[in-house]
Length: 404
Image (cartoon, rainbow, N blue to C red; front, side):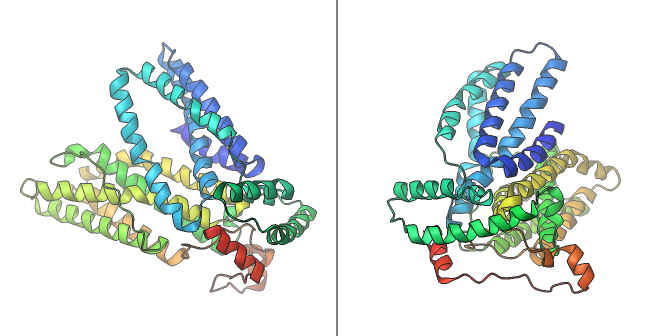
């Protein structure tokens, strides 16, 4: 777990400095080398030592890959693709592999072998054009945009792209004059960024604590879990999706609390099984929803750091999850009451502090200094609404092309 926390923080920063593609390649390759090395260990010390680095590099890959993918995807396809190709399907495949392999050494070597095609394919991927633009590599970004249009069989409007890239280059030159380097502290640079950061961190922590808390304490519930329900709310925005999911979860947890208070666990065992399925199924998609929101809320220069910061709270939630049910020693229904209150707090905090981002273009630039905490303290004039950007006719046309 310590390795996962360290990797999540370090590789988010590395990705925002050196690029998505090289960081992802390094993380995948080193993770697999360490995984193979772990399969040959014969002592607890060396097993723990090698798996520490496996988790460091694994966390790095998990921190970079979603952002790398989402920076290429159009807004309307980000959430459903994240749900389709992440999380539960991979867990099911891994479970099947574990059954076929028979022992953990064979499983480690098999999974490392299966990753080789992914490494080869990753070599043929292009770097994120948004990252290249942020680094002033306009010619490289233009070549990649040409390649994307060629693969999509769409016409390439060179004059439009040149116009946008020239404008981005001017912004880059202004930034270079200031020689600004970004760190985790910039996640709290403005009131808006701070609200986004805290909202996502609380949401991810709550999700991990609820999901793993129930999973680690299944003996306290009559029956067992045989499946995880995956729900996609394509007609809703990010905020309404988040609210509906947590509202259902809070309702189920409150029912758990009432059943514990009344002592009707045996009589209502089927209801408890259904409630557990609903909680685990609905909460699973919050992981993907938070990842998409992190991509859409934060500018390119700190996007991976924001995702990594959330990943840190994911690990903290997993660490705290087994401890939740120790509250039952104080009062038996207290674990469910605590989880219910935490979910309600997360639901309201997210709704009041995050703006809707569905179908919005990704932000590429940090907010201006006039929006920072230092400037606001000087002016003593906190904004009550978030700033909006007015796109020119050419900019709007480019955004429409992006959504296609």
